[in-house]
Image (cartoon, helix red, strand yellow):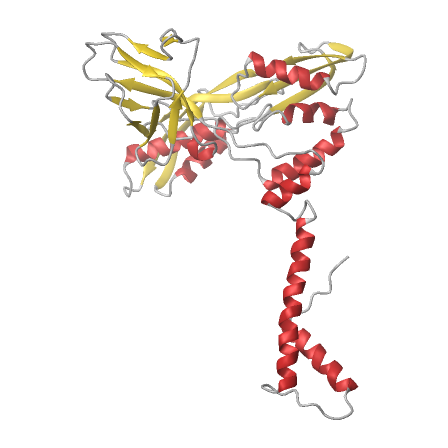
Length: 374
């Protein structure tokens, strides 16, 4: 139902009309008169009340509320927004004189040159340099550098620092002089947006019936941000028909989900799968994209800087492709032009050595680290 909202002049006019209609004689409602001032003050109060009503309406509907108001509305159904995710990557710690051994403790912090983003060294038991007894990574005498895993201290996309931006060691680490991230940080995501959480809420409601494709897809997508999946019914992974069986290809945005992620997806699907059906969960087949191109600039920027911008833009786009999403050859040129207004031409563009689109099946996801720009 539409609200009959009135403007301030309409409110004043309606009051004056009503007063004149009920008064026995002519009432002075000219500007500056007492009756006009009373009508105008009433109109101001009514406008304030109208605004309160509209705000209340907006906050009691998921389609119009936002932020904390939307979160509180969803909380009534036991539904929550997916939180922000920390960026991760590797930082290389180095020194000028490797004569003595050094220890880089877990919890050591590094940051970008401007200090806007900081990262913490985290334990990795699979790294041969890790020492649980000393709670750190040993850098032996004679070794000049070591690359260690770090995680952003604050979650969000701002933690996805470009390569070469993390160059400051916070505090002192004896025996270590410099640090740098050879590759860009990745995986940082902001908290789920209002539009995304609304769409997921609709999918959640649809999944409550269980034993449906929507329920299976929701079980995977609600695990964390960046999750995607493809569900195939009545066929095995090799394409052979098998009634009553389905398989799910799951990706967490990396193209190589861990065994833990796949196990969590299996357990989530098992809670909603149809009774007596069988299923399996697979990680995607990684389809690599090798990209080469040449750019021409107008001279307003350093050519090497422009090349780095184009390279990073292409890598970011390709590595965000979801399961089964193909990579058009022509899209790469568009990404190059969009990377900088100083780029005037793109030539010699090849995708895996040719000029055809890279097509991904529902079992594949396209990723790249091999982008050459000259």
